[in-house]
Length: 184
Image 1 (tube, rainbow, N blue to C red):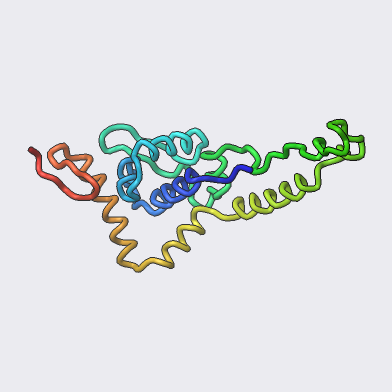
Image 2 (cartoon, rainbow, N blue to C red):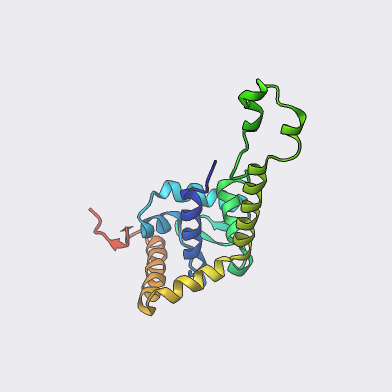
């Protein structure tokens, strides 16, 4: 059985930062990665997949970055999961029932008739899960996160990303992990 992995979790977290970015601020993959303490190469790969799926747009150049391609309330969690994980099913039936020792690898027709009951159960469960993911938007997740954090944390996050974009525009002010560093 396959499960959704880290790509879904990181992809959704990355997009929440874009959903909350101040107007005109385009966080870079490095900014988003540094803020979360993860690899910027990994975030860049995620953003490439999200861009191919039409979820984000990019702007080039030193002060460029990413933003949502459409409103956060028009992007479902399922859109993100499908973009970074692919649309393959979570469960792959191996048709084990045909291997029953009683049938000596030549199961009778009735044993192969219709969809395997286990497979049918897993498909129904996945359909329900996909429905929940499709009904949950980035906007609703962003509201939930905002309700959990203090007002100061939200402001600090927006200011951090704003500072990073301003710093990228000025070649005389290099930045690393949110702190200014002196040129050597």
